[in-house]
Length: 234
View (tube, rainbow, N blue to C red):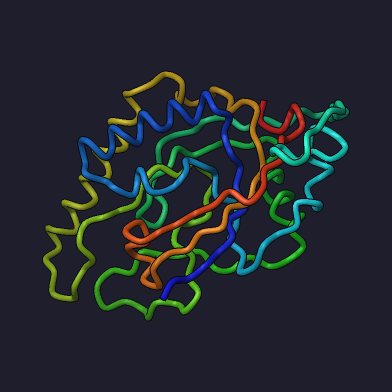
């Protein structure tokens, strides 16, 4: 049995995605993180339990229709906003056992505006449950929503209650080493550089009910994407 979720995301442009793929391939080769190749390197904004209508995002798009796919093509020019929003790279960080390149957004409420445009309440994000922690929620999404570009998950065998603390430290050290490698790999992701020509999109994901190892059994589809106005991530 699988669970299906719908993820609202900011999608980097093709050039940035190619560089991110190179970073994630390095994570797979040096750290054995299969999750680095299991899903796209996006900024996961919010999870939903049913599909979102792309129409709510027309005001953020580059044209009248704004849909950036084979069916509908935008031909108009969007007006510029007085205060040009920016999405810039930040530091490499860990959120709930997942590795991200953080982003710094101006204005600060841009991501929340994109989430609110969905017109409904997101489902709760997942947390990595260690040892004899709380029960797994019935509808827990696999990847934490975060202000950062998703790279990989924490993949060592899931904790048992009697596991030694030293093993916990080894896991933390492994992820910290991965973060340091990423920081050294490419100046393209150095803090302060801008994430250019971004899109807003919705993915459908089907994965195992045990979200803690979601990357082992996952299928995903990009349902739609819309080019954001110039200024939303220039």
